[in-house]
Length: 361
Image (cartoon, rainbow, N blue to C red; front, side):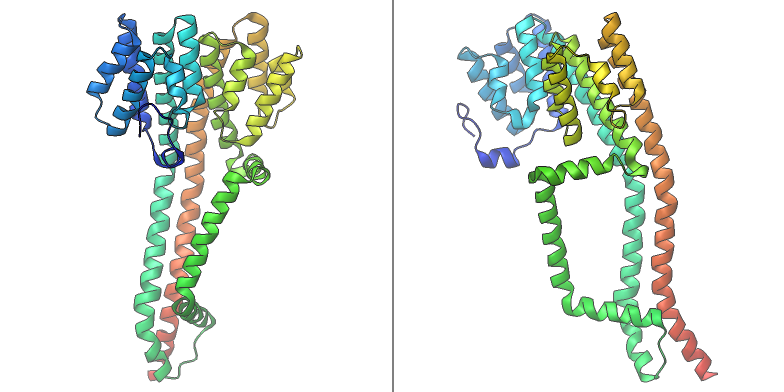
């Protein structure tokens, strides 16, 4: 990657900087700027200390750009695919307002909370995935290793196979004949589905909206988006960003297109002289009354940032509660699924053996 050229299409697809590296970058640069060193010197210190080779190359590019008279935000703009528009805009506001050190520290804290939220969600899914993997493993062992050894015995004894055994035998024969085609088709289907969900906006919008209407995940989806909305907007407002610009930046941090549209419409409404809290109150399905009410109070009292920070903490705790409830619901369902699948396979194998034993008696 050249230090003075924007990254190409392949770099944008495959280059990545870990969340922890971005947190360290923001926190370390905040410290050196607070100490009174120029940004140029701070970048050089961080470049010497970092262990990530790719981040080193990015820092070399930033050092060159800043040395050539560009702002840090302009240098980061080439790497928007790595840092995101939110990161870059917070840096730009900090440079313009003289609060770069404070804004970088805000960014480090925000990314730390975002990382913790993602870790919570992933950790909640570990146990169900372990159960699912074990279930498929046991069922696969019985189906593809044990059952084929018994099929010739059943055939030689002229045993009348029960419906479950016949179904399992049909499945086994199908997978032997068309297993690779089925696997290939499944992989192609998953890839095409992923492409459609990412590239076809109407389909992606429908899927994002569907998540908010599924009873089991509805509350969790809304709460996760509330954490993102309140934290990001509070941070932008505290850094000195005007409300309309803050909402425009905030909407670009969402992956859910429903919230992107609503927040964009909210910015347009405020441009016309409306109030954010009043507009959000009309979207009760996507923004709970607590959010619209606290925002309305914050707008009328001048404490909007503080109210948003309170909401961020509240909904962060709600996410913990909903995740615990969801895993408590998933665990018995997964155990039931495991019992039914393994029981079906075991029954399909044991029933003919029992019939042979009865015939011998």
